[in-house]
Length: 149
Image 1 (cartoon, rainbow, N blue to C red):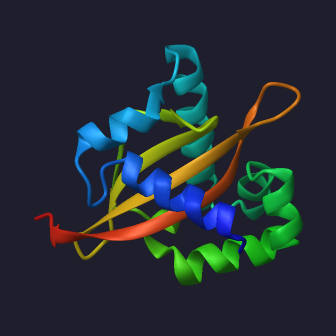
Image 2 (image 1 turned 90 degrees about the vertical axis):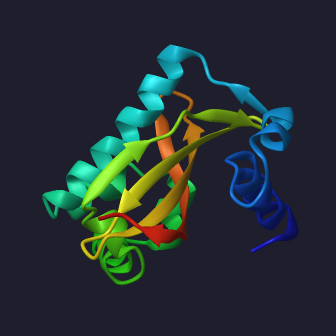
């Protein structure tokens, strides 16, 4: 992973308020127009729906071209999500945060809980395609402190 990508991911986490104040994050983030926010959320929800249906192909097609090249196949992708992103694969609950535009990248935080009640923050980065559609470039997953009951 190159230094720019690591820096961007750190900025994204900070912009969503993970470990820093919302005031700091607001200095670097812009609101996304409502129509684009709806589109971004719909893409992430569609991928969560595909995981719920065990539809590896549909979930894979919602990943950006560069992510698909890296993952190589729908089966590789869904197996990775099952192993390393279990809460994304089968969340007990999902709550979307307000999407932001950070350094030209659409960032969408999603609060999730797993089946044991642990709280997680999934931070999605979305890439606008030449046809105008958003696709998922990546998802960073961080366990929040505390539990929901």
